[in-house]
Image 1: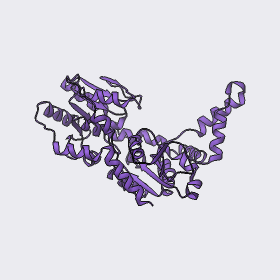
Image 2 (image 1 turned 180 degrees about the vertical axis):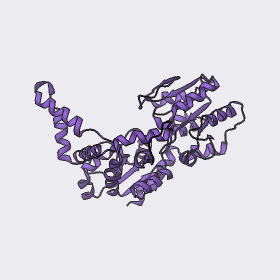
Image 3 (image 1 turned 90 degrees about the horizontal axis):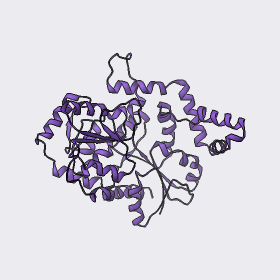
Image 4 (image 1 turned 90 degrees about the vertical axis):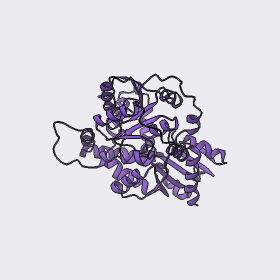
Length: 371
C-alpha cells in the first residue's frame, strides 16, 4: 500500500513504523499512484486540495488529522473590553482584529489562490521572478505578498475554508475527544478519535541526568495561551531556578528567567531531564505533546486542570486551578515537600497508549476500515 503523508516530523515516527510493516511511505509530494493520503492539520491542506480532482478520480482515500480547533478563534466574547483582563480575554481580543470583514476577504483570496492549481502556479511564477531586473515585477511581487499571500487564522479560515476541505475527506481523525467536541460544535464535522504518539523510541532510550540543574522546567511555544508568565511569577515567589524551552511566538511576552529554543527533539528532551519537575500552565491544547514527553521521561508533572489535560494524562499529574498563581505555588510546594508520589500504574498506561507502536495499530485500523 502506498501512503503519502503531508506534514512535518509529528507523523514521521509512525510513518517509519508503517514502512517496517511493508507500506510505501512518502512525504509532502503528491502522486496519483497513492492509495492513501494523510494530511496533518490545517497547515498542510492546500497541496491535497489542489489535487482533489485526481484524488477522487483515482479513488485515493483521504484522511485528515485535526490537531485542534481553537475556541478562542471562533467564539464571540460578549461584553466590552475590561480594564483588567484575564489571559482568556487577552486571547479573544487578539483574535477580534483577524475577524474583521477586510481580513475575511483577504482570507477568501488566500484560499481561492492556494487551492486552485492555475492561480497557485501563477503566484509561484511571480514570486520566483528576478525582482532586481524589473521594477514592475518588484511591485507585483510586493502586491501579491502583501494582499494575497497572507494566511489569517480567523473564523472564515476554519468555518468555511477548512470545513469545506474536511467535508471532502474519507475520514477525519481528531487527536483527542476535546478536539472532536470542538470540531462538532464549531464546524459541524463528525470525526473519530485517534490519539497521537510521542517519539517513544527516542524518549525511552534517553539517559537521564544524575544531577538536577533546575528546580522546574517547561517546554512549548512561548505564546499567551500557554501562560508562561504564570510559571515565572510562581517561581519568583518561591525563589526557584527554572528553565523555559520554546520558540517565542508572541513577541510581547518578556520572560524574566532562563529560556531558549532548541530545534532538535533529542536535545530538548535532554534538557527536560535536568529537572525532576515539569510544569505546564497552558489553558488550551489539542493534545499536549510536551507533558506526555515529560511523562515518558518519568518527570513529576504539575499542569492546569483543563479538560484536555485530564483526558490525555489521567490521574498522573498534580493538577492546579488554571490561571491561579496561588494554587500553582501551593502545588509546587506540595511536590517539593515530597508529598506527591508518581502514580506508577497511570505512568504505565501513558507509555503504552502513546507509544509509536500503539499509534501505528490505531492508524492501521482506521486505514483498513476504509477498504
